[in-house]
Image (cartoon, rainbow, N blue to C red; front, top):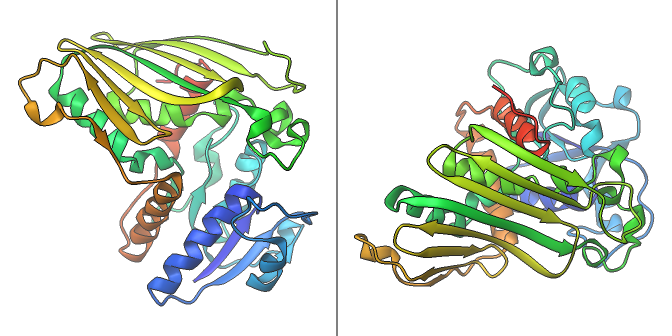
Length: 325
């Protein structure tokens, strides 16, 4: 396979490492090209070092016009603000695309203008779709009568990449697509997986903390599903990391912790006893990314149709507090 990566920052390197490992396991040859800026320095937190990249890349350029015209797969892993233009530039050069979240930064972008191939696979990332915690909560949502859900994703931005100055990172810069609404869009992705799309969303977003950034550091939502309600809290300034979803049901509370990978049940009086036991899953975030890459690669090798770009645009609308049909 001939593969192009448009952007090779931390997330691009993670996807590249997973792709190479899977191709080696399946005895698939792969040639890697890249559209990227020069990388200065190296962090121990990177999946692949700058030196390793130089050995792995058969071709690397900083101008899209210098890329080839016949890629099997293109990974869109550059800043979110560049996604739409990069997808448009690569649509005629590649059969399939893996697009890092969020799909775009503007809900008014027209997918129809991208001229995506009819037979192509266009996948927008969402690793929590492969979480056993989310799978368990989705099953609980089917089996239990849920009144409402409370969701929080809170962490301290300067702790994300300890070896770098947080003020210069992508998340801190609004013009690059940073800010909690887009950066933490995973929450809306898995909420739509569990509950579908809400009827109405009320949103408040802004900059509230001491952090030296120009992007939004908090967002708060209330979603009306008719039969249930969801409240969602996102922030960059929580000193104690939390990523949880709590379901308030007729029989009690069910809490999924996406950091510890556990599901707990409190006060449950249920007709389905099989969900009454607390569960701890032996999985990590790396496992979720690995499952996601397997899912994507399987669709390509088995030629299974897949295109979730339009659905991801609707999720973007929820994150930005703009309701889409």
